[in-house]
Length: 442
Image (cartoon, rainbow, N blue to C red; front, side):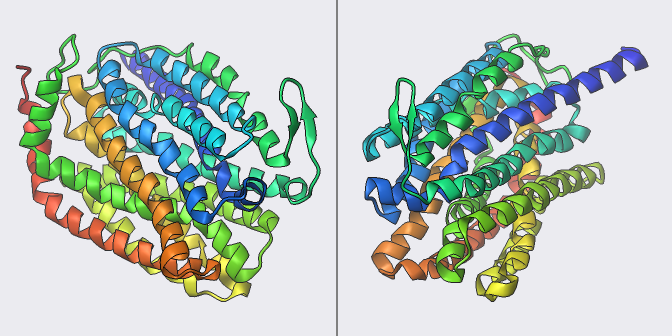
């Protein structure tokens, strides 16, 4: 390959990353818009914090997590671009259908559908990106893709804050085919339907050759399920340590993302509009800075010879998150400033996290091992994180105003478990990073 061809390939690779990142942004807007609409949805549907937490977590993550595994299998043998485009179309339609829900269970089922569609994004996306970039730049590339989490979460909060003036009232709109709709229902239509255009855009991307940037064995077929599970079992310490460690960080992060806005309203009396604008802005800026910094540091440590670089980045992120959780004790006049470090360190490890899975996985099973990683992140993180906070508030403290205590307990316990898990996984991870080069299909 000539220098000019290599340059063109790299430019196009960054274009692919940008489009996939935009898809990730949209997925997180659709996923997390609920965080700033807790009040009006509780009011209109007559439900509790615990029921809201199931809309945030279980409804979405159950099928998202489970379907990620067969979708990962499919992505290791079929066209990854087409899988992603189809998933975007599904989750966009299902997000819009959330706006047509008339009761709790209709909204629950529509959220299940959002999870089904979003399960088709990241496993094939990680695999595609790994085939556009060599391993020394893979952490940065996946880190940029992962910006979608924090840009999407931030935009969701800012959008949610912007519409709360209407949501707080009793007015409603009449929509074609739907009839009368509350303001929070209209929001789902507004954010869901434009995703269909994005699905068409993603369908124009070039599907890269598998293993184009890898120094490991490449085969024409996806690795068999037996090979995947055999390889994962052989390196169980690396995969379990990585997946569980980041899952418990995600548990804390989802608890923060879904319940800190409500805590700011209840404990500090801040308006939803103010929270959405400021907290959303912090998430979209300092959250982005954190994931870029973590991806960059992981690549730099890897170039310096640390085969466990990505787990080291995770440990640094944990230390920063524990320290920055002090925002829960800040007085009202500085609380929004005190939150800044937490938004930076919450995102710090996650560009490195996804890249790490690619580093310890043979090419024919990358999407499948990525799906196992995402299964862990979402089943533990998104399901348990929001539910744990709500359960402590409703069933242990029995006081809506104790939500800050609930967030603190979940934070400390979750991050300590994550740190212990990473420390135990450092040596097995180094072994797996060496063994991947010698893997041969069976």
